Length: 257
Image 1 (cartoon, rainbow, N blue to C red):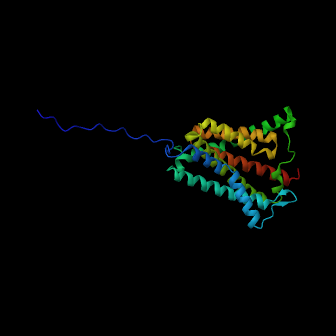
Image 2 (image 1 turned 90 degrees about the horizontal axis):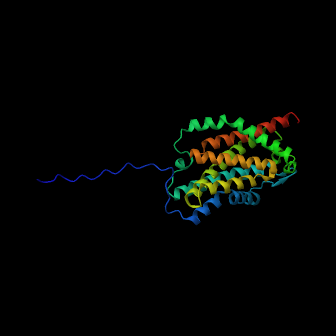
Image 3 (image 1 turned 90 degrees about the vertical axis):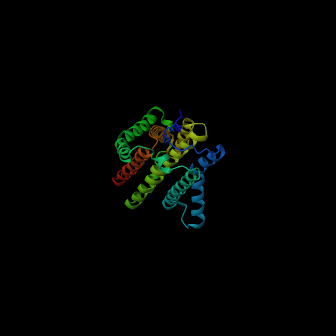
């Protein structure tokens, strides 16, 4: 009796990974990418270029001029976004996979907006608590950004800047850097610790108390990305939080407080 044609076992359906493994991505190249998008090189490049060829005053009576910091922030946002896109394309990865994940965007946006009051109260409470318990942490009496809210037009422009350069750029940086740490640089927890500390240090110009609160806020946003595998919730919350701060400062200034 002849045996029938042999049947090949069916291969299991492919499982969609959170992100492609990027097997050809070396440790040194991942570290170079993280350094390139951390904000320091791109901000220096933008600042030097504007100062040399932009004919924009770097300083004014309040310190760094409004025009200069606005242009540097927006150009830096564009450069970081472009670099991240280029690095992901080079490693064969999808931006939507890394930054959006599988969760419905609308739901993530609504969650980000909904928790703005809680985040705002938590940060305010921590700053006030630090000033009461450890008054030495209140190293900056007046926020350096209040000088950029002289007119309604400047306030509106600055609001756009903090949303794009803060909410959008910083969450793209956080998501990409955590992603690269998870792949090649010691794990996502190491990346979270490194970026959270750096995030707080970058805000020391606002005072030790404010930087400490923002450091914990960065930790919260980083944990959101790790849990959700999407930057949308954190990005929405970050952008709305920054916008609320600008609006609050502008209203206080308008009433002469």
